[in-house]
Image 1: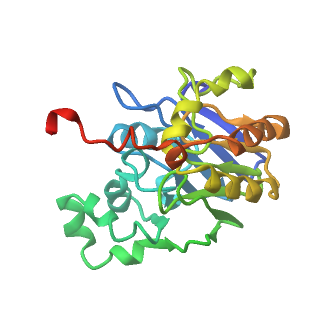
Image 2: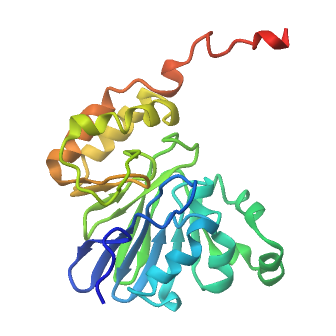
Length: 268
């Protein structure tokens, strides 16, 4: 049966290693978000699976590529609702381990529903990998997925996930765009800037942090940058266009001034 292109896109497949993107599972008023699956020699990891809006449709899509019994990891770039609020369901209905920053490890139990608390009592830490600030490599099947530091882009404890086989960087909110169809190919980078600029100016901390990130990424062997919202950057040309643009963007605290930090007049 042919898969719906608007729901599922194969980013990479060499026969034993697959990377899949799901771009249209959010329905209703929720912000568009992408979810990702990596499968290596039958073992699987999900990246940024989202919340209740996406849990059921995502598991249905995953079953087209792997069995939930083969799911080893649920990886979270940061703590936002559209990233990891479905965590209790993954812990109850699969044997997967949650991978997240050590800064958010003690906050994640606040997501627990009552039924998860009863079933997981005393076993939470056994199902958690706490990422140190410098990142780490995580064994998946016969390869490794590398957690790459991306702190303050935009979360204080933020990671991106690099797949050395496909050479894809799953970049979280870095590179995010507000588009109607995230499966549509990027053809005009200059026009695409208008779909990224406002988001990055508000959600990224500062140009100083961005420049540190860009320097790190330029030294990596990357063929695709795939954000959690919107359209991916494919190939060296698009990747360099994005890095050149974001490297010089003033954002976050760079744009704050006394006009923002002023008490509303009606309170005086």
